[in-house]
Length: 183
Image (cartoon, rainbow, N blue to C red; front, side):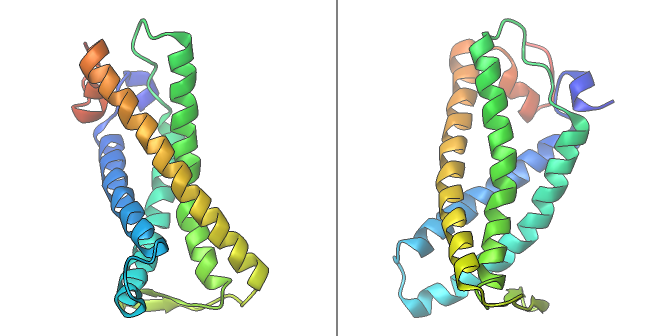
């Protein structure tokens, strides 16, 4: 049975959610530090390399997560949820899935189309595809906007989860934490 049939999130869906959530939270924090020139160039270099390697690996993890979610479907909303909340939830969830792909993909393209290789934790390097100034700059812009979009969507998602947990007490959060579908 998939998630849409059981009315809750299975163990793999929950693991996907929490692993990707923690990884992207860390990646966003590091990305914002790197983009705001908090560190010297020498300090930023190793952190940027780690960010690029992790982001590249995360692209594969997120591709798996998105394919899994599309195959599993989403559980139906808990009973009694207002129509506007169902619509908002769908928009935020689909927005998250899109941005989770766009974010690491644009980061990878930013490097590879900017003439820079990506070293994957010293195991191997992905060579640059080309140095195409316009494409690299476009990928950088998309990466930056995607970061802000992801931060906004995460904020909405967490705020809604807290509302369901504290105000509504409707079991929505329990589906992602414990996998239980009941109230």
